[in-house]
Image (cartoon, rainbow, N blue to C red):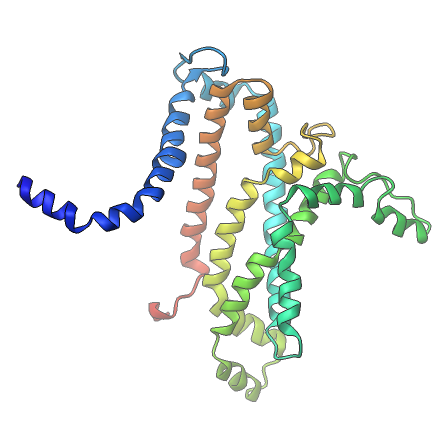
Length: 301
């Protein structure tokens, strides 16, 4: 038995050697911190003293007593509900526009994909704050029409809307995936539909959307998870406070405040696990609903 194990290790030694960097990263940066976070979520821990076991106290406080957490959940759900559908709609519209054989289409695709590379960066968030500030570019353009605009990022009625717009601007990644999906739809279906008298709108709802449903579902799940994890934009635009009046207090931003501003690391760990459960529930609902609107060719429906 021992000889067989030794021979197996010697035979696969090269493979284990190449896997070593990944194994170190997985156990040291992913699995280890995850297990530590789960343990800390049941403790009182302030980074300065040793963790003290608290049982379900953190979860009980989060679920029944933390009014600011409910505000963070409301802001985050509003952001997800508005940003994800609008971003996917913009991405699909542009993908269909770029799915044409015109001169320079590769250049246009690169230009439209650029916001996805820059959109989540600190620099673009700072630029976004300047554009929508009291003396920003948007208000300067509105002033030409005689309208005096508010400070969009510091007004509680508009601050979250500007972050939704920033999220929509990051349509490049889903757009590329939609574009790949559109290329897989047989063109003879459109030609047959045209011969039968179907117009562009009918072709879109009868051919494009049903055959693109798996890609839409894939993008929906990915973008929903990304929306729940949004942090940088709210942190930069609100100055790290979630203001004004908690109007941009994303869940992740509130978690960050509890961990690194209030030094309630145990409670922040509990918030992280609650967020994981919320994302898991939304993902499960998406998968359960997919049986009613996602079409796969090998299902024979």
